[in-house]
Amino acid sequence: MLVLDTDVFTLVQYGSSEEYARLVARLAGTDPDDVAVTILSSEEQTRGWLAQVAKAKTAENVSAAYACWSTTAAAVS
Image (cartoon, rainbow, N blue to C red; front, side, top):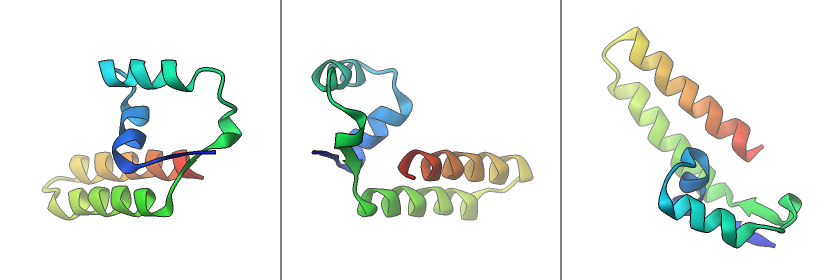
């Protein structure tokens, strides 16, 4: 079982950096069912997106923040 912390989980979500490429190489051959994210990582990201919702000044920015939060929620479920 591999547990990804928030920083590593964020790399997975954005998937375009050099660090992401190294992570993918390291996880090659790992059963996806053996990779997990802690509830703390989920909470940290949820709090971050909700803070973005609270700061948003336009409906477009609110919608974008909720969309990102939704993507995060789907990734951890």
